[in-house]
Image (tube, rainbow, N blue to C red; front, side):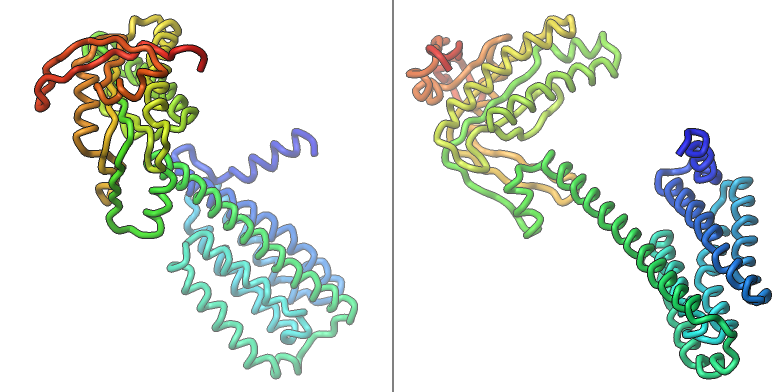
Length: 407
């Protein structure tokens, strides 16, 4: 197909589309236009056949559809309003096949051409949805029942159509409706699968996969106790001051760069991101699925975050630094809220990890003594001494420097 032909087809398909249309309205208009044009062109088969058989009055019925479609398309192109055109197309596509069947002499003589009225009911589902499509389906059922009742009378006045042509029309009618139904169902299944995949991606951006599965199966309270995890808090130093002298879009872009990098680290190391609060980032190792190396995994995450912020600073041309805090111990995890829900953690371990971050130093990773005890054999740590921690008194803390040896 040449470029000119493709361009002409596209212009025709979008003849009723307005720049202000929503995506749904745009899709409906294009589908309606393509369907009307396709059905009008296909109608020439019946018009030509009936004229060749000397059935001029019968041929007028598909001609009426063609003329109505052309007028409707012209009005659509001029007004960009598709509701009247949609109504006329649905009505004509359901009523005219039955009129054609009755004028030919019933089901057998017409090769059951009323099957094409099913296209109108399919269109009603597409354009109006399940509830508003019911009246159109009721109309189809009523006309089908009426056709069954009048068929013996209509058959007495059946027109003489050669057997081979009648058989060919049976095949064409059955195949045409079957193909239309298949294509519409395929479109619906593809749209459903795409919507489900999109919803799943969005859900997994909020919840761990195991928690998301449980929530879909049971909308009740989800709360779990975890005996031993490692919580990591990170906060960009002096970011508030940066926001006061930097345009909003630049601020959002910087945070997006930082947190996207942290998200990739969490995914690579197998940690679960919990949330961001302003310029703070919270991630945990050891839940929802327990892992024996959660302290090491949390330390590796903290070290990687520290290195990553240095790389981002160079790329963005900024002097960025973060404080990071770690603690290990028991937590409670669960989903709260029914709208815009969140998966969150509670407990002393969470509070202490947050205090390790807030009382830390720029560019340093501060950990509690219980983290120190579990990392001392594999990591280099530096004693900071005892510091005052709100609600905890004085705690002995350490700075995590790096790993000892390879790995």
